[in-house]
Image 1 (tube, one colour):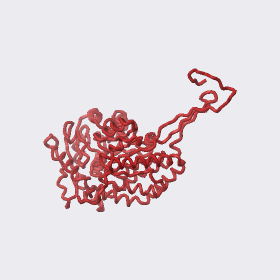
Image 2 (cartoon, one colour):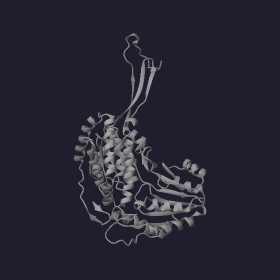
Image 3 (spheres, one colour):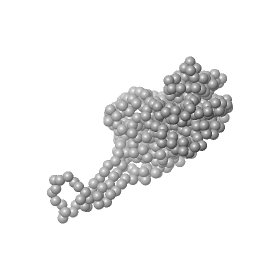
Image 4 (cartoon, one colour):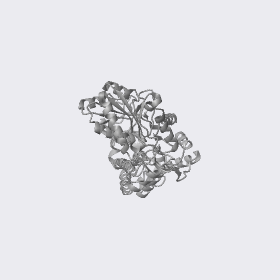
Length: 473
């Protein structure tokens, strides 16, 4: 495991074998049997204590994230703040697990529904949000009464260990949460294990598709969130300064390693020159350097291999017909860290790699079109459907866009429309495999299954033999 700001090895991670995965699942199954019997109020109490401890120690966790991921300290604190929202939501689990009741559905018969935990569930989380995404999954899973196995990225796993320690301190029983380090062997073992009822995943689209296919083939419930190519449409009436600020913030924040990052700005009508000029003027002010140095706004990428891959898109843009306005490859930062400065590509278009591929780095492309309809077509024709945004002063145009676009999360003058925790996160098309979005109401639904009870208490005076199909009379 490397420190991406220095390129130096900082720790070693043991990778679980299939046998160790089996042992972890067996232990979780034993813990799940007793954890599901813990009263809702007690589960909520543990979540409240966990929330208080996480809030008190968020700065310590942010420093762990910065050291292993590379994002600047303020960005790590922002990630934790958004993760805390999910703890807040899970604290309300007694209300969230209420079922329905129908008295007198038939003569002397009542019908009601209940929600019950699945048993052992697993989460496979990415490197780019080592604290937030585990909190997306495990808070609802645990509060609903499941045992949870967390397989974090082997690139930055310490945040998951820190969260597990806080939950133990909050009173979570041993075995209910397991942090399992591993690579493909561990993931394949989780997908095949009959003791795992459900898998949550966040990562690239090819892996998400593979996770979904393997998991469902083995009879598991799966939500697999994949990649993105998020477009930000800027209409001619938009506030250019506001749009440029948003494009730079959403394109280069966290070195572009966000599934909700803006990677394509679509300039509509005559707005292109003014918008590109405004974006380009802001880029030199972005302070790039180690994430633990005060004042830096963008840190390194996660690995040298990934940095070189991202730099390849910058190197090849002009050969494909685009215009390279800002080249971030000459970053001028001393040392062996995995740095790139922001790059800006103009006149990108479908068919170019810089437009088509999910770059996942600090590279912002601008595409120019004449009309709203052309901009909308770019969004809807794209294979991904994670997030999108429109910048305009026209309420009618914004409302029409939210109706027209085939994307799961939409921002109106908001570049990164990640929902608050009491809604749910999820894209469309190749950005999500499975029917259920993550966290919020759909997260509770994913980690429980419904049971309907039809009850009648004995009344010998009305009891008869009746071989007909039950009716509501």
